Length: 163
Image (cartoon, rainbow, N blue to C red; front, side, top):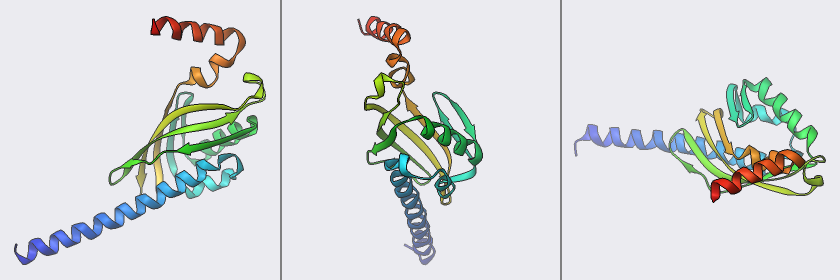
């Protein structure tokens, strides 16, 4: 191996270590925030999300930190509790994906009982901030199937698809 190739490999390795440690810090902050979501101030989102971040879930798209903060404020004002159990993420140099279980209750859904919802997030990171997050989960399982008439219809459709 020539001297140039060795220096080039070492430089590349060092750059990769820096990127991975930055991503690890973002992942740690993500896990910590969502594990205690209902006790976190919405203002803490600015340490996690880029000012121009995009958050997408089955209920819509929220572009920019102010829109994400409004979404979380509305979400947290309407639930009794909400936090996440997050599995070990899979990651590459600027993206991670993780499955999770949301633990939550809402006073007008399922009589306020404790509910769980499985889902996953795919998260793109630039520098120390999340720039894009796409959450995947079954909105029918989350809300619709717990509503009296609509729930009956959603459960019926699921039964017929399984049959």
